[in-house]
Length: 496
Image (cartoon, rainbow, N blue to C red; front, side, top):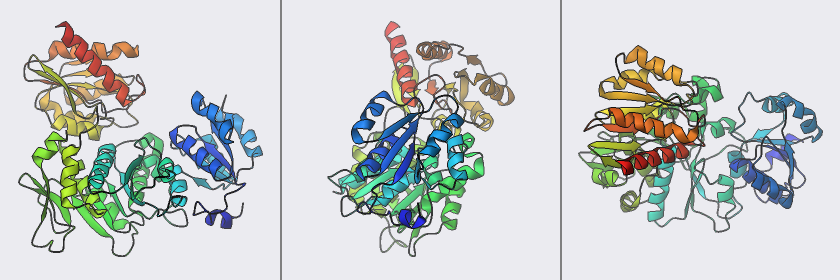
């Protein structure tokens, strides 16, 4: 493969025929990549371990071969080498230190992610949609959904996609076409993206909502994680939206190589400056996207609208302000922003009130899969019985425990890494009642946790599931963890 051919593959209408492509992974993004490449006429082979049975059955129908990885990853290398791939598509589940990724790098094989492929073929339906990129440690999905809702209120055809569940490749191939793609993009996907050359994205607007400890195990450390997130701003054409309360995001914007004329737009729950979106009394206001921004502002909604949307926590308000800034950048009127906020309702498992009984409120924030998200949930309540624990992903809970010790009634620790969580309480909250749930059976973990929490909760307390950790040690995902919590709470209430 000569570099010139790949460099020229920047359109759906380019000549992709016969290109030998190896796709690593058969998850949602891997399948979308294989399907897209097959439609383009490429010779596609997918390599995956324990592939989804339904997707595996479809592959031969669309003309794609499958290699099931068994044994060690190194054992598969001769078979993969025999394919003589000219391009490798790397799914987000393959870490940079994965043996097959290392093998491809050693042979200088070009490696793309699904986002780069989608950008290159974004013109299948013309005119190609504008892209708005959203990343951050927390709040990506809510902000993506809310931005899309605001733009839809403005009459635009919008697809929320990316890491939110609908692959970007499916969105760009939708025959109906869209005006705007609002793309939730993870640090894993950003890691693969080039910032220059024919595969580099040039989004209309972009945001990194916040930066905190997360996925250090995948990236290999804090700096690599930060550098991946910072790529979201590269080549932005109109608006780089950043969090005024998070200096790291402002520095990312300052360092970004963007198009001439691109503006830095701050958001935050304080009085906005003349290029910001913020809060004046209980009104969300825009001082960025109007001509007389030095002397006036536009109303975008109220705190009552935010509360009704289920965004009454500090991070929920921040998400609403970020979405408003992005929607305004993409052409939504102030009225469309307000109406989009008013009709929006936050997803399940995000600071969701399950029920109130006996003076105790039960809240499901299973989406709090890291300390930064849990911090916001903990900040929203006064007296808490905290259900915490899971897969820590290489981060520590010491600072979180220390920050919220005064508002904790007790802690109920779940997950396979309980020892590290309990040790954090011993160091920073000595004397706090801490209970471990030793149940290994997934069906019993939440029942035991709920029973223990109920035994110590008092009138006026909130029992808060905000694990500050990933869920895959004992549950399918954060939604499964939240559902099981809600079921256990309701079952117990029905018995009392």
